Image 1 (cartoon, rainbow, N blue to C red):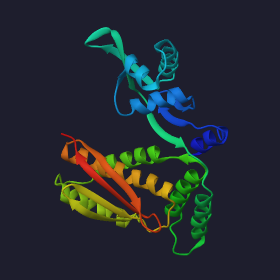
Image 2 (cartoon, rainbow, N blue to C red; image 1 turned 120 degrees about the vertical axis):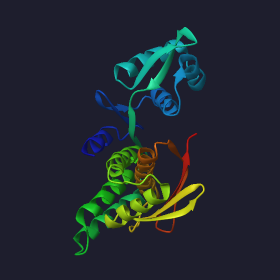
Image 3 (cartoon, rainbow, N blue to C red; image 1 turned 60 degrees about the vertical axis):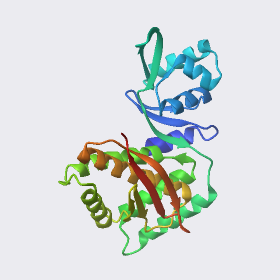
Image 4 (tube, helix red, strand yellow; image 1 turned 90 degrees about the horizontal axis):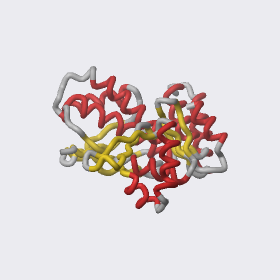
Length: 254
């Protein structure tokens, strides 16, 4: 988190993304490279595809892609259908994105910090939320990083859950969330599988999205590990007067 804050302070005047690579954290602020990486998040692309998407000449893009490859942001391979073409894919993970400073969010950040002094407060539980709210309010969108943290926790949790039935898995996750004060988990529907998580704290909308992505990472990973099937988030939203309700739809990938 300290590294992400440092990157934010160094780049307050320009938009940027932060990727985790084999070479460490890489900050990307060039608009063309950000656009390429954003599209590579969803699918592999050829140089022609990238040219069509960006509107840039292939010669210009080749310079960008060469730099991105040396930074371990992307890798490329020969196209099986045409060895003269290269297919580019992402070899890094998106960890954070910048966004505009939110004064309302900063107020919520300090309000959250005030609860640390309360007798019945769990210090680290509040600090985690305060860090998320503070980062978002300062202009650093850390949803992608929170989703990765959720995935990591999901991998550990899956080893402790014996059942492979979706209903039982969700029940165990409900207990985990309640026991650790993360939130109250409710199954809205099983077909499609729709989860609602109610947080006990007032949140800004931006922070609510990042915390929701944490839960999405947990649920998706645990389900995949235990059922040996692939899932994705088909839809998600945060709502409520205090932005403390997160709802997401989990869909199996056939």
